[in-house]
Length: 424
Ligand code: HAM
Image (cartoon, rainbow, N blue to C red; front, side, top):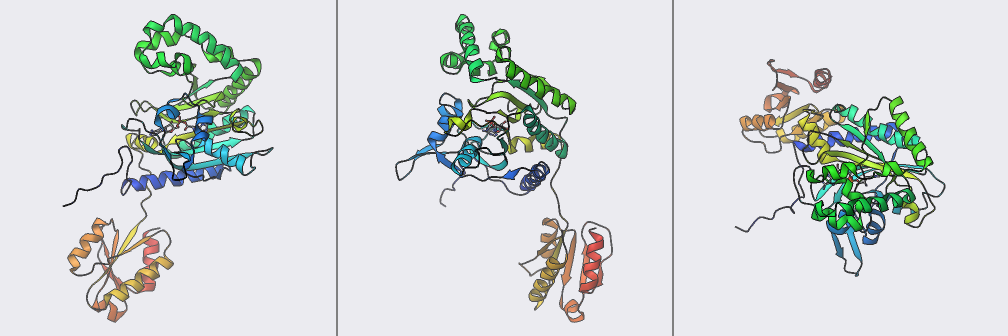
């Protein structure tokens, strides 16, 4: 036998029964974005590599070592998208959707990062994200956070996640902080790990985000960006906090929260959980007021977040939140010659007239016992039997699989009424 082909490491197939959780989560997401008036945007999965370099930053983990980059047959360097923000801004600029305009966008789909796969971390993963472009006030930072909080509430996991926020200020205040941070870290260079030593000159801010316990004390005493904010940034951050308090959203200010992408300014936030081990961040985002101009547009403020669907589903599982919508099912069985066309006719009539009930037809036929077994395996609640007798008398036999209820024979019209009231 020929060797079987496996999926690429870190890339998953998704099928029943977990696909039911996926679908339910996706439909809850569609409901929440509709509540806030966000509109869907779909961008290509592949973009020019330069887009990600210019937006996420040349010296970030994502761009340095995690992108799926290849040269296409025309000689262009392309990359599978590692995230969605850069593509949204690119699309907005390309189609003239940003200049003096406000956009509230959402997207959902696969992203790609060549990370070391483990539970909650994959090479192809799925994000739901929103991007609110064209608004600079603290109110929209809070709206974006409220939208995520409403999603937790709709999913029943509001107690499983905690909000952390920070402000990264402006590029100017970051520059002053950066110099002082480098000076401070140089004093402790001998104690730093290899990764942090490498980042010392390239991206020292990220050292603050290190999870290495050996660096805990050094990081705790390091200069923090939030202490370097100018007056306007401070006022913005205070307004975000006071609105969150007014809306009863609990949060902690984490001065070490710096995010792994370079485009952030002012507010940054993460929803973290204690239930997913190392992959603790379920949802993350913030403001990126410099990105639109960095990519060639007019200066335009923007804020957004993205969450990992896989992580959210793992959390739902841990939290024992079964959100799958299991529609009732009826299963049509045909016994004997001539039962096939009668079964088709019955199944199609039911599909036309019954809303919210799934109608499965046994398309294998043969041994009735085996047909019943398949009905059970498919999760049917009710089996409808069409045999010679039933066809002759224009009736259907109704058998209940999940209840101790006697079978009965009814006409098709009575059957519709019966099923409608049964599955009400
Ligand atoms: P990010 O922090 O890189 O931000 O990713 C957001 C979320 O995507 C993470 O919190 C996590 O839940 C999920 N995620 C990231 N990498 C993986 C992975 N390898 N496997 C599974 N899940 C993963 C962004 O992507 C920004 N674009 C967010 C944003 C939007 N900021 C402003 N607007």
